[in-house]
Length: 84
Image 1: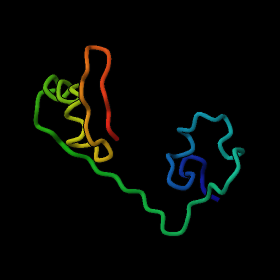
Image 2 (image 1 turned 90 degrees about the horizontal axis):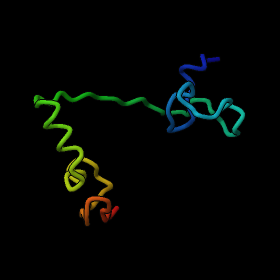
Image 3 (image 1 turned 180 degrees about the vertical axis):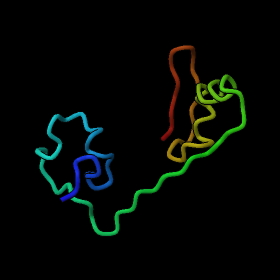
């Protein structure tokens, strides 16, 4: 039996991050599935944090690094149109 910290729902985050107080009681098989692989990577971006924050907050930049977003058009200061 694995520790609760390392258990995950198939394709999910570790159980200790779950919002449900007893995630294993939610039903379903929470044991790791055959062939599951944890993949992670980090990237260092050599830019000032203010520049990175401004880039991230400009919604029209999101399709450049979020592949499920086709476009974002800002309509005014409170609304934007997203094509996903």
